[in-house]
Each structure stands twice: as C-alpha cells, then as structure tokens.
Amino acid sequence: SAKKTNRGSVALHNQAIQNAYLNKIALRDKLRHAIKYELLSVYYQPIVDQSSGRIVKFEALVRWFDEEQGMISPGAFIPIAEEFGLIQQIGQFVLERACMDLKKVQSVGYTDISISVNRSVNEFKVSNNQFDLISEAIEKYDIPYSSITVEVTESMATNHYTWQLLRDLRGKGVKIALDDFCTGYSSLSHLIENQVDYLKIDKSFVDSLLQDKSKQIMISCLVEMAKQLGIKVIAEGVESETQLNVLNDLGCDHIQGYYYSPARPIGACIQLLEEFNSEKKADYELSAVKE
Ligand code: C2E
Ligand code: MG
Ligand code: MG
Ligand code: MG
Image 1 (cartoon, protein in one colour):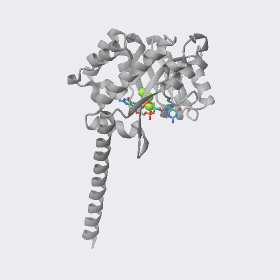
Image 2 (cartoon, helix red, strand yellow):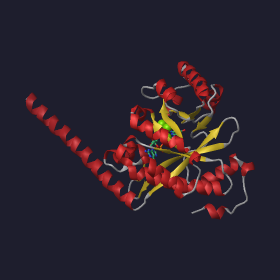
Image 3 (cartoon, helix red, strand yellow):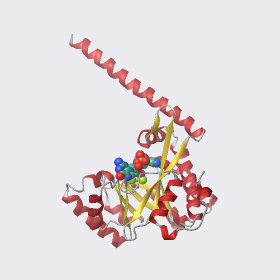
Image 4 (cartoon, helix red, strand yellow):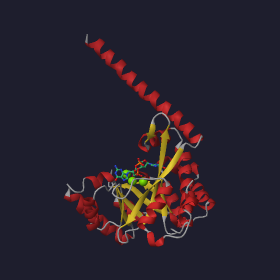
C-alpha cells in the first residue's frame, strides 16, 4: 500500500541521514587526532603583482594528507572543524606555521613578501581572543605586522564585533582582505564604511568572465572604485592566459591561480621566488631552508 511504501522511504531517508551523521562523526574524530599529532600541513599559493611580474604574497592553505583516505580537501573538513569547535586550533596552527615559514622566506632575502591566512566566522567570537592570538603568533616569530593579511569572507563582514576586531588588528598594521568577493550578496557599503586592503574576486566569478560581458563591466567598475578607496583587487582561480589577459585589461592588481602555480610547500615556494623575483635573490644555502 501507499502507506507502506511511504514508511519504507522514510526508513531509507532516516538511514541516509544516520549514515551521513556517522561519517561526519568519524571525520571529526580523525580530524581531532590529526590536530593532536600535528598531521596537518600548510601549503602556499603565490599571488603575482601584474605591474612588476613579481610574487608579492602567498596565501596559506591548510592541507591534510590522511594515510587511508589520501588528501582530504579543506572544503570537506573546514566545515566540520567549524561545526565541532576545532577551527580555532586549526587557525592558530596555520597562522603559527605561516609566520615561521615567512620568517624563512624573509631571512633568505625576500623581505617584502607577505602571507595571508584565512579566518572562519567562528573564530571571531567575543570569547575567542583573536586579537591576542594573532598578535602573539606574529610577535613570537618577530615579523612585521604588515606582512600578515587576514582573509575574511563577505558573509562574516555583517557582524559588528568582527569589524571591531579587524579594525583593531588593522591598527597594529595587519592587512585585511575580503575573500570570495562577488559571491552572495556583495554590499558596497561594507567596503566604504569599513577599511579593507584587498578585495579577492572569487574563482566562480572569474570562471564565467569570458562568456559574460556584464561581469567584465562589473569588475572594471569594482577596480575603479577600489582605486579610489586605496584597495587592491586580487583575482583568484585564474587558470588560462586568456583569463589573465582579460583581467589585466580590466585593471586587476594581483593574480592568483593555477596559471602561475597551485599551493606548494614552502621550499618549492622559495624556488618560485628565485624564478619570479630573481634579482632580489640573496646568497644563501638552499639546504638551510629545507626542512
Ligand atoms: P579560498 O580561501 O577562497 O582559497 C582559494 C581556493 O581556491 C584554494 O582551495 C585554492 O587551492 C583554490 N584555487 C586557487 N587557484 C585555483 C585555480 O586556478 N583553479 C582551481 N581549480 N582552484 C584554485 P583549497 O586549498 O582547497 O581551499 C578551499 C577553501 O578552504 C579556501 O577557499 C578557504 O575558504 C578554506 N581554507 C583553506 N585553508 C584554510 C585555513 O587555514 N583556515 C580556514 N578557516 N579556511 C581555510
Ligand atoms: Mg582565501
Ligand atoms: Mg578566496
Ligand atoms: Mg574562493
């Protein structure tokens, strides 16, 4: 009967929910273990300045190579970390590692390179003391505040407390980037009322750029406005030369994407710096920077 079939499908549905839940719990436990035993690592993706052709910045991206599952993407485990209160530990691990690696980069002569780290919405709770955590890591490795950029998403920018914190950090010299810009509901008033240093145009927007003339118009307006406000525009997820050329014509300041390089370990990034920023190269033992 219809009732019976219905009950059957409800049972199946419940089963699916239960399985999904169990998978999530299993991943959470595995993640706890990975954090505890420092099995996470940090890779860096270069951001290239278009007027000089040099690498100016690297984005720190967390990596998890699991023995059984292989590489588990941040897209899969960051939401779990956020849900189960593990994001703070991951964020601090990534920041500390980034400061340590930036110190290496700067000590071999690339002194004007900076690094950006991502921050999740849950990390900016009143109780979390983000200001102290971020300052401590920066001071521990004795690098300039201005060589760290904190990337927050637009959706986080609606929270008043978050902005107060970002303003405080900015007061110390830390740079702020609005990540994943042009997804969701972009509010230009956020940009004008709250000072940020960078706008990062999301990959999904870059992807549809060539087919969609209206998006090109939007970027060109955004770039114009950003200039007036002293904000630099970074396009992310740039994979082809055609995309690169269009974005350059539209006036984007910096480009990040597989066209240049995916995220790599810090040693490989120093090699990239030799390629891109070569006249900056200082004499050093490469072995000194290898772990
Ligand atoms: P995001 O901050 O927008 O980072 C950019 C993502 O796009 C990275 O993915 C990067 O590898 C990828 N990407 C860059 N260029 C290209 C390209 O040309 N083609 C393609 N297909 N992809 C490109 P990833 O590393 O998987 O990170 C995904 C997201 O996970 C990040 O998006 C960020 O929101 C989050 N995430 C990563 N690391 C951290 C972290 O340490 N803390 C927090 N809170 N979130 C993180
Ligand atoms: Mg980011
Ligand atoms: Mg991004
Ligand atoms: Mg993105």
